[in-house]
Image 1 (cartoon, rainbow, N blue to C red):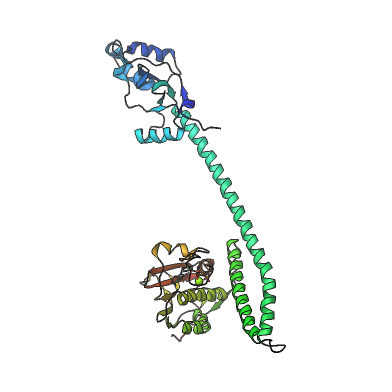
Image 2: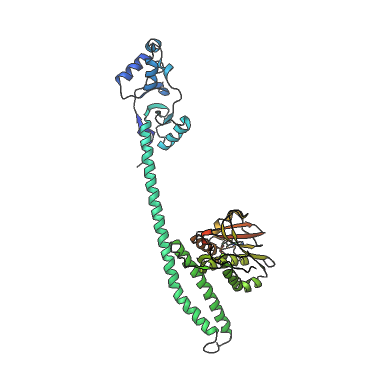
Length: 400
Ligand SMILES: Nc1ncnc2c1ncn2[C@@H]1O[C@H](COP(=O)(O)OP(=O)(O)OP(=O)(O)O)[C@@H](O)[C@H]1O
Ligand SMILES: [Mg+2]
């Protein structure tokens, strides 16, 4: 069904010419109580409009009849009228009316076919059509959202079940490769195969990590993030993660700095997730910083009067690496978003690290954001809200 246009709103009101006497227009208004306005048309072209209200007020003033009775109606017509072609859509009429008259609302408009008068458009009907259009649009949008949500849910479900299915055979591959690599049942013959077995094991572990990340993402997208909260010192976790990454930091020929504020209080959070947050941020810093650079981990508590401008426990990983272009700073926080595309990419990764990190920090009521300068370095901040800081527990004394 084609949407209604100007012609569908037009009612045919017999027009009068500009030199019609006001007395006969007055008679028309008296004899046609339904007519709210009369168009003034010269040679078929609309030139103005007299509205019942304005005309009658002027005409009925004392001596109005004597003053105007014999004079042409053009004297009393409104000249700033809206003229629209019969094909004009209701939305366009509405927009034009608004820009022409601002708050016109109930002002009628004149409809023409090829420039010739065709009828008077009723503003009340226009408003009804606009209301119907808005309602139809809202319903369509709601339906679209519902479909998109359903599609997204089934995709997440698919991802979750696929990941599960893949993990079982992969665990067998990793397990048996490990058995062979460790020569549990004897030497691998010929010795060359030993190398292959190492590769099979390494690739298997890599794949499993990827699948685990995908599974985590699927869980997060379906809203199943569970927090197993305990009270612990974030510094213990930080140092433990750094111990684990020591080898890759050395291999990448990077300097490591740690600044953990003195007397840091414990937090109430999911230790495993905070660990993952730090691993992901530090791995990125290591991965995207060329040899000779520095990676810094800092943890501090910020209060309302501190210069950091935020409140809570702030975990920051800073590097002197390649940086992220300003227009990608928000984007890389989304799943599968990487600065380099898959054709130009020089570093391994699925692009899930930051999305997972963000989701985990947000699950704690916190916030994750990046600051970066291309070619200079990046700062990744994870802020845990003050409510996660345990204030009535003894603080950790040592600082690094
Ligand atoms: N410290 C950083 N310096 C420069 N670029 C970074 C840094 N951290 C993240 N990026 C950019 O953001 C992208 C997304 O990071 P994210 O950790 O989500 O994925 P990834 O590291 O590519 O893969 P993985 O899923 O293995 O973590 C990266 O591909 C990289 O382009
Ligand atoms: Mg990463």
